[in-house]
Length: 450
Image (cartoon, rainbow, N blue to C red; front, top):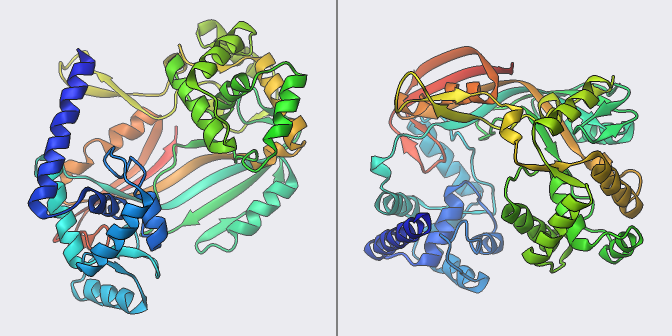
């Protein structure tokens, strides 16, 4: 039944989309271009054409770069799109100042990039109301993080100094010198004999900066330009198949998945995206079963979490990301309120939420890191991004107070503490220069990790 419902829903959405396009005289390819721009991605003409081919922007339909290039030219001839130059920026700025608009909350477009004209923006907003019933939707609150205090962690002094040099050139950013912290862990399975922390304080406004999730872990992708032929030889030496390594790679990247189909699909995508290697999902499924059979991966349960917690409790190493290391779920969730039928309440992160998901075992993590070191060199983990945001000041803008209802509960669901809350009425404001509102409200929050 769910598959049938999804199919019927998709058919209805496709019909609504086609009707909206026909009524406004837009082609599907033109709408894909507009969709990219409406997310604030003002790109060069060629980059815009390339980005619009992504199914996320083309409403799930296949469009080619050639079609998009022709559509960019056609939209400019029709006066719907323009290439931003200095005179266009001055004109836009003068117009906003004369109307006393706050913003744009998400910043001005860049010179040389393609953006809407006023006519094009009006056309797109009409399309959104027709295709997505925007008038029936709850007002949306646009976020702008204006102040953050973050601790970043590095495997070497050299990596910390390189990051500091890059940050010091940014306006509104204060950076400390690197401080040695001794042994530390990023993930529970990722222990380093020494490390360095850097304190970063950033202030900004109207750059559309989104709030972090508190603890952030990202593998910088040192394998993107590596020799994958060499990797195959190393894997053969350790009797590890490529599909097995790709599945282990998903675990290293921190994806939280609880289905075999999801982890295998992500493993196959990673092979194609990172190394241009064609490994099928079925091969990855066999690789996953082998990783579980050999004890390199496991499905998390209470016993596995207890084992991880004992390991961390008996070690003096600094936990850079305590929630991630202790296997707490990321993000927030809402559950039914037992005392009020039909109502939802925030549910703070819990390690029980990770039960049923896949994760490394100690032997699997050790094998994976050994292969990576042999392939990429001993400094391959220097590219890790490990950051813990301790404080943030957020400004949320909305045309009505209704749009703020879920923001504070969402912080509670993430395990954050809202220390200060202010609601301020404002006059004219705009998200982008072309997306304007006659009045509204700004919700100001100061948030810390609890």
